[in-house]
Length: 194
Image (cartoon, rainbow, N blue to C red; front, top):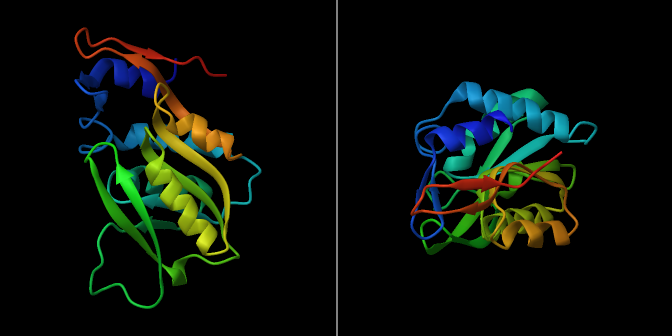
């Protein structure tokens, strides 16, 4: 069992509706030492890939992506969920549906930050149904860039997102894959990984 799985068992809370609450260390309060270990592991899993940019989506993926980027020595770009006066020039846009927030958003990346020369590693905190990842993949492909891989902190293996993304042919690496969880007992089971 890896350090992320151990931390989920210790501090994660299973809520009704297939919600895993990890806000005490992952996506509200952030354990930077844990993120550093995750960054090392993503660097190991994507060793040899020609990665020159990390792409994530606001807000929960940003912290993890920044630490991962330090291990690769590359910049982070994050897709914004709202248009602002600070965004100018041509935009790459995709619509994504949030499992957690039960809504749809257009996510936006300024075209000047992604080009056909970029080899991108996508990073996010959770993978459930894969909608956010599909949006990020669409943005990368719209820019003419290459998705070199996808790194996820926690995948809900009992939902369709991981299978769908892997079936598209992408190298998807999830540090913890929750196979089953029970909100009544609080029990969490992980998928065995190499």
